[in-house]
Length: 244
Ligand code: ZN
View 1 (cartoon, rainbow, N blue to C red):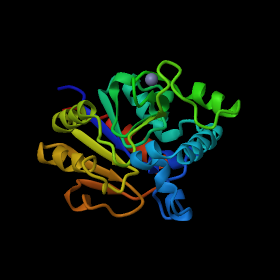
View 2: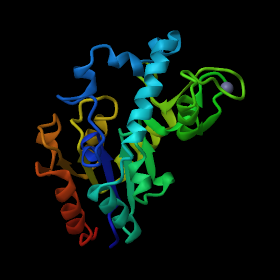
View 3: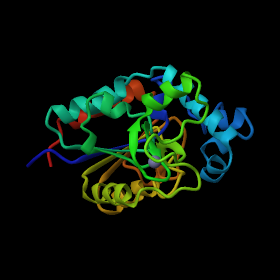
View 4: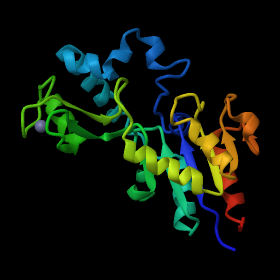
């Protein structure tokens, strides 16, 4: 008997209660502003300083939202602190799971992180706030202070591959967990989405918490449509009683 390994797989819906818009959603930036996708498409970003200028302004705008972890992020971190083994696999780049108290080593960020900036030439990493300070001080497209290369957010842009090491770790925990909770993800972006299927194939209890239908609903042991901010804390409370 012991505590089950719980994997929380989170998508954009996890962070909308924190005020971070779902850029791909129906009201998302990508639909509102044609061409906005170029700001996060590697090829355009690398080729055009104007795209980079607009991209940094978008990062500054998101940072200015000052998003804080919501009840769902806090509930996940609280369960981990209370002794249930928890791993987070996330499509989000906002770092809110860690800000809620999840240890960095237990969070696998499939799409990278917007908390860091990376040089596309020498790969040196630095905090996002440092680059945004330079933008605010009048550098529209700040270059790497080490090598002069083009800087970009530490996120995985369209046209870039997921970090194979992060993906391998995510697959490993999906295979090894007893409970896999997919939260706020439409489970449509591959290969991230297929983790739900991998977990179910390996015998995990699959629970989906999402406002809309997902392709994995028929495979799920439980589908919850209630708002994430209240549904996830209640679900995790219930799971903490479970022994395997
Ligand atoms: Zn560099």
